[in-house]
Image: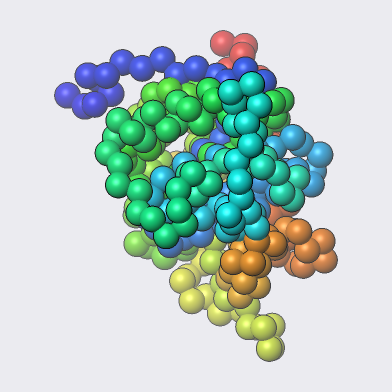
Amino acid sequence: MSIWDKSPYNPQGIPGIKHIIAVASGKGGVGKSTVSTNLSVALSQLGHKVGILDADIYGPNIPIMFGLRNCQMQTENDRVIPPTNHGVKVMSMGFLAPENAAIIWRGPMINKFLKQAFADIAWGELDFLIVDLPPGTGDTQISLVQQIKLTGAVIVTTPQNVALHDAQKAISMFERTNTLVLGVVENMSGYVCPHCGNESELFGKGGGADMAERIGAHFLGHIPLVGEVRQRGDSGEPITTDMNHPVRAHFVEIAKKVAEIAELADNHNSSM
């Protein structure tokens, strides 16, 4: 008997938020937070109202990537007002704990944090709330799918077999919890030399597309391995804020596909 058999759940939507999309990976180090950040910014640039919830309790990097380190929380009517940068409302455990402090929580505390993140944050009206999940299929993922009605999940992987193997486990978890996999993003898909412009397949290429085809999901696109993506994430100026950078076009196309698929998914669900 599985945990899903023993623990019936009834996830709920959040008033005012149209689409809630989890960004997940099977393993760490595949650039999931980078994809979450740039997807959020790209959706905002396309004219959508967007928020991002950093649900990676133990490694909350979203404040760094949005240039919101040491941000002071403000409240109104007993609700936290999420700070905004690059057109995106942001909430993270990184705002609530000292930057270098370890968060030593077990499942019940994570569950409580997620409840408060949805109930006590003044998100307002949003077209998209992106939830940046930690790697794996642990307490945070379980609490999320049990509590919140997701539009679906975006899976981030690199092309190499080890990452694909673990990404498949994340996909399996969403399938078992009746959560739609909106599609797959292949990150670090070819290294582009900054000097000569040649591309080398350091981690392979095409594995994400093959996996998407195998599971019957959309392949949302690939992101090349470019040093500037990391540098701009570290500086709080995501690559999508550079309107002329070629990598921005990759994220914009992914954002367009996510928006289109999410709309189709919600229309399908509402008609059932």
